[in-house]
Image (cartoon, rainbow, N blue to C red; front, side):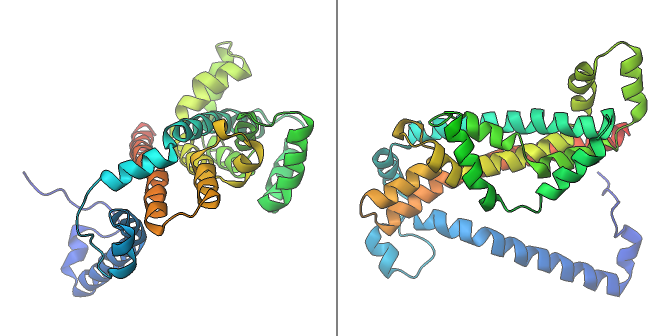
Length: 289
């Protein structure tokens, strides 16, 4: 099988130059170093979870003495994370759906429908990006209490359904779609909502994957809003459960390390899945274009 030629910035005939080969090696080495620095904290936490307290405090070796999964099973049973995993999953799924539908509809209205006043709405959306999230947490919580939506996942879902950054991403992507397909759907008698769900969204899989990645990571790792809203123990997410566990009793460092590993596994798996889907969608969109 013949070797496939390079099709990026550096092509095969560029590699004949010594300076290009040196630059290529330097870039490759820098990328390798950055990868090691990025993965080392994750690797250290996972390996530290296999150590008991005595080994964790006294040993300077990165590798544990044994790779016994019994401590992880004990920590899982001690925390009772099964119910909290389910709560976090419910929070993530609802947040992703609201992030795609509500932010997508607003981006669709501004970028494609363009009713009167859409320019003002777009400027207000961009202006809201300048407001720190910590400032809005107090009025958001007060409104949740006034609407009596406490102890439910609905406020968490809706908070991701009104995200200015997601709206901007949708607007930028929708403006690049071929307008002829939108006009064709109108000629065929599709309503604006039918055009959005049957034409625009199927063409927007790459940006939907990007928004889903952001929403999953934010919803899973969010602590403050779930801690304020989901006060009951039955609805606690994983992040809230870990905080409550660390404050209720004296927790050893090795136990906390293993609990952190449990909190990291799902977003890593989901990110890998969505990253692959994002690459495939981007490639297929480029071929169709």
